[in-house]
Image (tube, rainbow, N blue to C red):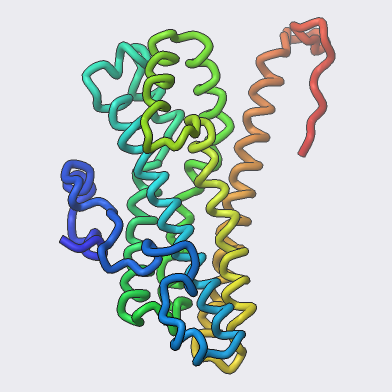
Length: 283
């Protein structure tokens, strides 16, 4: 079954059958080289204007980096999330509340992965249909970029996720040993789990930059220009909404931390349970 038919199957089926997940397509042009010019015929490249060459390189970079990102999402799913949430030793590794603990660290990682698999599949399909000379990536990006609002849940909980990870590494030997063993998997490329947990935020912030690059080399008279302008607007709006959500969540955490340090007795002045002064309230 082709990756672009992912939406026709249920999430349970997708998780259970590896063949339904994203895999490098045999016809994926972006998987064959590091740059657009490296995989295209020289005669074709020479027939294009310098601006169009730069435009194609920018489109290629968008797709190439999306492939790399989706691969990283899948690595986390296979190497860390599934053993920690579905594996027979999950409770031993994470403790009796392993389901809740796993949710704290990974939030809606599966939803993000499924969203980006669908996005990448359509990008690759368009690249394949256009034989590497992509005419209108904007309409494909526009179809999917609004779906990146699903990052809200993950990004607003990222601080708590990293805190949970740090605490587990410090307090649970079983978890520390598990992480050490798993990070030795060649698929992890010597990156630790905390680095992978930062990747969704990094990718979300990069979308406007990648779209700007394509738009920069797309003439205003090009048929795809209006769609790219709308893509950039939507990407920036989604990023702003997620940033605002994360800021609100962080403020709530700060308030809870302050509340935990205050010993309030009715009729008396507020006093801090710690001898140190309260930390400054930074918005």
